[in-house]
Length: 313
Image (tube, rainbow, N blue to C red):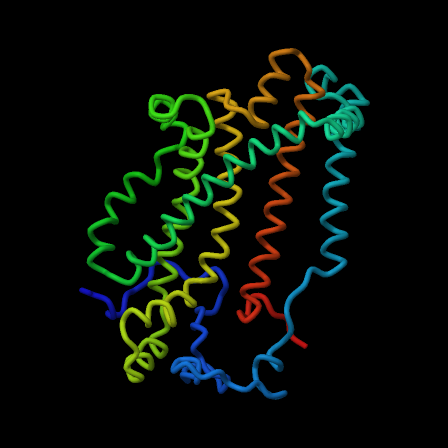
């Protein structure tokens, strides 16, 4: 493959600080190729970096407490604005009323039905973005000729907002789930594609040269060296793509009236049920928080070998 192994100057550093030297770096320290490169599982001793460098990072109780305190402060502030008349209750109902409405709706099957519709469009769109964005990003990242050929097209399409595809989506699929999934996939694919490309190009020169010295085939080099090197990039932007996909899914439901939280918010607003509308907006925010927490924990589990997910002991 043309330009497969040439050193490339990467525009931007890794968001995790250190270059993610692939899983091939030996227990003996940076720049030394370990037995994993040739298919041998190394033994981990009590003095190896896997145990001495630190332990897996977990959220501290203080971090959780401060986060909860911040949320509580915002809720109290909104409640005070309504109680003091600084904001008309017609525009922003009391937070206690919104929470009561959310609690009431959460006990109904209709509420969970619209949440399920939103998650379905979000899930299909994100899955399509992952299935296309990550493999294509790896191909672009490992081959400089492909990067040069596709970069203008990527830079042209990336700024296009997903809502601009609404006429095309309605023309192709109507105002149903397929249209929502199409726009969600288009919005979520770009962070995955771009960062996977940069992650594949951000390869430690020592790891690359050592892989050559071990005569690892180019195809195996992609999976054994470049893919582990790109994993921190992919994991971080999977969280970003997840949030983007949820935003686009709810927005498309608002605009094209496809089933989901967005359509329920629009229906409540058109009926003058502002408390229920704010409750559904709050539900969308809580759903985004839950998805972000899920992907954060997933990232910590699968990247527990990476320095960014470890703490000093």
